[in-house]
Image (cartoon, rainbow, N blue to C red; front, side, top):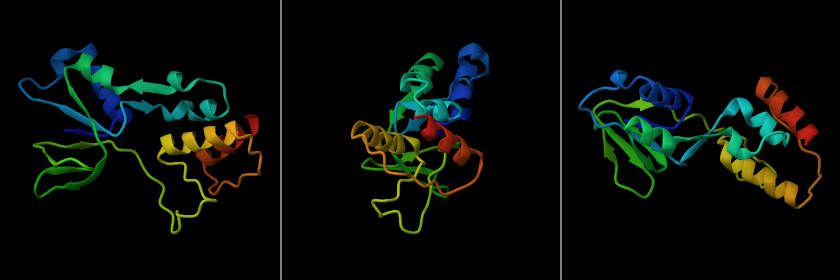
Length: 162
C-alpha cells in the first residue's frame, strides 16, 4: 500500500516504469491519494508568481500508476491503524494492508484555523484555489505571511511578482 502521492512515491512509480524488474512480483500494489495529481512543490513559487500554468507543475499519478502496473484509488486518507493494518479513508471502508509506505505530505496546523482571515498554505490545493479566487476578484488587500523559512520567503516573493 502506497499511502499518498508525494514525490517519493511518484519517483518509485517512475523507477518501476523504467526498470520493471525492480517492482515486487506477484504483489498487488495500490496507491491512495486525495487527488489524481500531485503538485511538484519546487515549482509552486513559480506557479504562484504566474510563471507556470498549473498543468506544468502537476504530476499525473493516475497515469504513472497505469504505466507502472499499480492500482490507483482516489480517496482522502484520514488515519492509520497499525495494529489492525488498516488505512482509514473518508466516506469509504478502511483498506487492509500487508506493508504500508506513507508519503502523504504535511498539513499546517493552527490553533484557530477557523478564522476567515487566515489561509493555511498546506495542503497546497485549497491554498491555490483560495489564491485564484482572490486574484479573480482583484482583491489587493495586503497579505501577511507567518513563517520565515525558505518556503515563506519564496512564497512572499512569488506573491509580490504576481
